[in-house]
Image 1 (cartoon, helix red, strand yellow):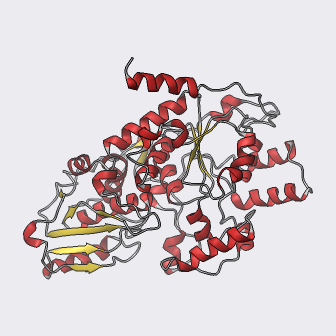
Image 2: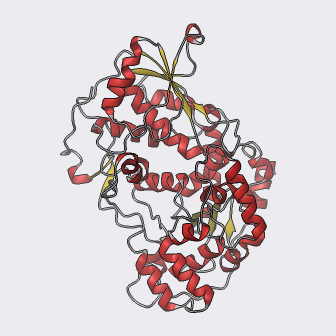
Image 3: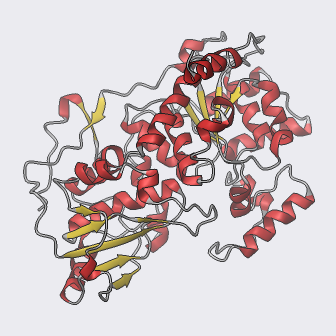
Length: 477
């Protein structure tokens, strides 16, 4: 027997789903009666016949002759970089630039040394965008030493800004370097062909490197061996807690450690945070204990397979004890794969995050404990792929209930379950148009309050079957 076959057989033996007693359930998320209905609990929301429609309009021309080269420093973690790279594809089209394969952030919290080709399929990216822009792997040798314009592109800018202010720089420079890539392009009010290009870049061109895709597929197959599964993005890592200033259920020593990290991270602007106020407003990640309570109240049974998409949980196994006591079938990369299988990715945060991303996108239900960059990216991708079920916890409402249960003024039972179910009936990822800015906000706050383009690509990149050919498109060169 070959080593690979032996390893697979050993995995099947070690990871066969155990027989677990079913925990008491109140009623399912979608059930109108008092009885539990697992089929409805797992059923995806109606997609109302929406499907991807990202083909360019008949007026979309082949890319014009490039006027210069666009260098890009993609900043942030994996999903922040992904969105930024896709925006820069659109920017390159607008300003008639040749896009040089972006440089990934190596200075962020995770200190990941990965290059673009380590994380993404570089050749596929270049070839997929042939009809949109020219992409090359490196700047031509004769221009490496040339004077370049280093520019912080204005956040949330429209086509006019790039055509008038940035494209005019070609008169003096052959190379423009974007110092940052995140949030450089407006979410709304862009030409339809530019919006569709962003979706083609994000959901078709920017796929992960073959080794990551293969490992991600393997993890999905192994999760499916347990049956339908939930991917839980448990954003309870040290960096997230330090950034958000959330200290609920932490010791004084832990709270002080997180505060020190925040104060010593120069690019985190907000240093003083009231953790009680932060949690009351719903700005904190749910704790593992709170997530366990939430899943139980929704009606999930104790034998529900759950994939934990996360880095190292702050507090380790002891902090996971309450969640594990309710849901013993908790899996992650390390429990589903051998050390040898994961070793090529282990010291690269972006590559490990990419594995979590794949398993999350392919899950039967995705639930994030906090609305961070990965949660939003996965939500948007799942919407694009047919509005797969994504349950978004209402943290503000939930912590009020959890605190009452903790104080003993309310019992975890049918009444609380009914309230939690009712609150989340319209938070399951069903089709809706992207939310605009909050009324009354102005300037930067107005753009910041909009729902991000990659969280919900409807209506720009999703059409109902009967109307997909009747949608009008503005002409875009």
